[in-house]
Structure formats: C-alpha cells, structure tokens
Image (cartoon, rainbow over all chains, first blue to last red; front, side, top):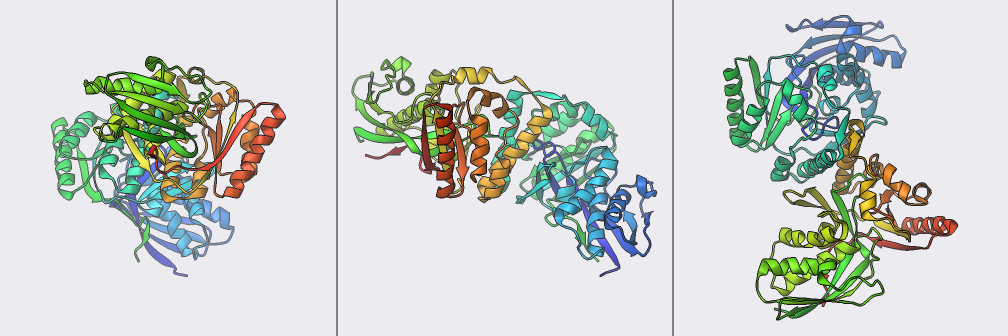
Length: 307
Length: 307
C-alpha cells in the first residue's frame, strides 16, 4: 500500500447543452493537482497551495467532507492529509468542486488499496457536490473520475454510462463574473412545454448518437438547448454574441458550461478551436470583463495518480 | 422502367417508450402487401383487397393523398393504380396508415425510376399521416421506409437518423378496442415537470446508447416513460397488468405502441417472447377483450419491392 500519492483531477463541463443534469465531459485543461497521504489517526488535514483561500476546516471543505464520509464508512483509525494545488477556479462552472471531490475520493481509494467500486467512489464524491451546491449531482463527478463523456441516466439508483468521446477540440471562456449555482438553479421554471421537452429529447438522442458514431455534423446539429439555455444565458453577459460569433468562426456548437459563467464550444480542428478562442477574447475585451480562456481536448483518462 | 410492382410495407412501433414523437421501430410482422401500376393518365385508382372498407376516394385514402401529392409535384400526365391487401389493422397503433403511406411513396418512386431522395419520399408519405391523424409525423413513416430503428431528431427541418437495431424479439398484443389518435393526443398535458423531462431525456439517451452498443441490460433499464405512459395507459384496459406480468416473464421492457391500443414488449430470446405472448393472451382472455398477438423481430429492410 503506497502511503503518499500525487493526483491530477481534470476540469469538467456538465449540463452538456441539451444534456442538462445528465451529460458531462472531462477536459485536459485546466486541472487540479492534489497530494494525499494516509494518517494513522482518524482526522483530515487540508493544506491549500493556491490563492483561493478555500476553507481548511474539513467539514467546510469539499475534499474534506468526501474524506470524512469515507472514514465514516470505514470505521477504522486512518485519516488523510491533502495538499491541494487548485488551477480550476472556484465558481468558474468547469467543475472545480467536482475535481476536489473526485480527486479526494479516487486518491483515498487508491491509498486504501482499492477497496471501493467505481459507483461507491462516485457516491463518496457526490458528498462534496452536496456541500458545494446543495445538490448531490454526478454530471461533473462521473466524467472527472472516468474521463471522456458520461451519461448519468439516473441518480436514484445511480446509473452511469460511459459514452465514447469523439476527437474534438474544446474552447472554454471563463468571464470573471459570479453566477451562483443556487441562483442558476432557482431561475429555472419548474414546468416546461411538452413540445420543448420533445425537441430536447430529440436533440439529446441525436447528440449521443453523434458521439457514438463520431458523426461531427450530427453532433453540431444536436447541440441545441431550447429549455435551459434561453433562461440561464441571461445571467451571462455576452453569451448570445459569443455563441453566434463562435458558430460563425466554424465551431460545431456549444453552450453554458455547468451553471456558468463559463461558455464552451466544440470544434473539429485545432485551428477552429483557436479562432473560437479569439472570438471569445474579442467579445469580453469589448465588454471590459476580465476572462480566462482554454483551448483543450476531451480528457479520456479522468482522475490520474501521477506519482 | 418497370410498369407494375408488388410491395411489402412493414408495421411499425412509434413513440418507443421514452422516445415519444422521436423514435420508431419496424416489425417483420404484420405487414401490408400492395400492387402498384403506372397509369398514363393523371388519376389515382384505389382497390381494396381486404375486409377493412377503407375509402377508395383518393382524397380520403392515405395511399391516395400520398400519390396525389407526388403527382402534384411531378406535373406530368402519369397516374397510379394501387391494390391494397392490408394485414395491419387500421387503428391498431402499429402503423397501419404509415404502411399505406410509405408503401405508396416508395412504390411510386420506384415506378418513376427513383426520382426522389429518401427525405422527399418521407415528406410525401407524411401527407398520408396528416390525413390519418391530423399531424405530419414521421416516427412510423421513417422506420417503415428505412427499416430498423429511426430517430426523428427534428421535423422542421426534417432530420432522420438510422440507429443500428439490436437483435431483439418483439411481442405485440392488439386488444380490439378503439383509441383514437386524436383522443390520445388531447389527453396529454401541454406542460410537464422539468424533473420528469430530465428523467425522460436520461432514459432516451440511455436507450439510444443501449441500441448502439447492443447493451440489452441498458436497453431494459432505459425503457421507462414517466411522461406519456402514465397518462395514456389509462385508455388501455389491462395495461398495467400486461406490463408487470410481461416483465415478470422476463421481457426487457416495452410500452404503448404508437398511441395504442397495442402494447409491445422487447425480449432477448424467442422463448421469452413467446412466454410474453402467453401472458398477454391470459390477461385479455381474463378481461374478455378480443385481441391479436404477434411474436416477431425488428424488420431491418423497411418497405421492399418483392416483385
């Protein structure tokens, strides 16, 4: 049993356009680095190696609550020390809390000699999402752990299906404004028109088929969200302009990453992905809003033990 | 150019459980036989070779309106004679009108030397559905023409995607009661809960993934409809009993075929499909309702020119 490990936990895009609450995708960039070590007493020590000032009290820290839930299950005398070097900005909408939660759960499982099943690891990690957003959701957690694209068919009971990921480029822009996950959730209507729901499930079926057949044109046509995006995009300045100009630059399509404020686009080539990035930069320069961009690919490995 | 042909047009299951309005499947049994011949004057002659007394006025006949729409497009002096030997009972919910419409459209195209694209043929055939049900829908037409399983991602613009069909058996029971398509449509709520819509699109994504991966267990888990079935099944006596007993007999799952009253079940083996048929028979014997059953497989060819 290794006593100390280093982990890389990828950023993720949840709510993949028409796949609200059920479809997520892992990114090669950005990602968090975590160093974990087993302790011989039942406590959790959190050490932050970044500028985000996240809580070090394990009960208030996403990685902390995940580790506490594992310790509660184990009922033995081990504990964990976690050093977190976070590169995925909290509140960016690209799975910052999921990376901490999934990294902690996978890392702890590895340190404990792979005691748990994949579903159990997801369940532990969801405790972190519950702390971060008030809701136990798995559409960041699952792709973060498994890599690629994950379908969360159901949460109760947990039913996660890996979807083969197409060879596409991903461009992400994070405009540095705050969109609280709870606000993004409250703004949604509790009821939707049946005709819109039908259009949405036509699109989700098309998107999944496009992924499975690696049919880029079908993926592009299916990247349409008639239910969530029209409501939530109001919270993201520049969204409509970014989207229409990125499509104009040749991107296949995209939308809000998670509950925002990040926006992502899929492209078939590195050149289009870069052109898409320039479009995003121009829009936010024009609006005078600070931003980060990433041009990356779909991460196929999920959380990795790198040392 | 052949002057006379014989056509086989398969029955179809539309509204494939969670795939309401977007997913349909062709059946090897039952099917209609049609003989068609080109006329050198612009008229349509309908001859019925069955006991159903369907209208022979082309304006009131499903095959008739399809052929008239083709003649309107052509603007030349040809016409068609169609002899229809219908085995798919009108009003059964297994695509009787679609078989007439699709058979007529494919047959005419063949007689005309394959003038039209696949999408144009579907568009012509949809005129027949409009006559039969008041709505231009393609989820029977598309699988009837193409065979296998069809995803209708969108009607405007038309976007039909063939989904590889799994090697499954299909059992169908047609309890001989009347459910009018228009009634079945009116009973639906115009609004649905977002949480139900999310569950439905998780299931449709799972079902399509199951078909593409030929993953029978996933297909079974995904054959769940939380939106349409709870409302429409009220119109079908014995539905809940049939469904729960068929699942008990080992069927993967199933639901209402089209807008009913037929009910279908998918099974992995011929033995389970037969056991499922016995369950269906027992339920309707018990209820004193006349019925037909079919034990068949997924038709992979669609409308065929057999002579």
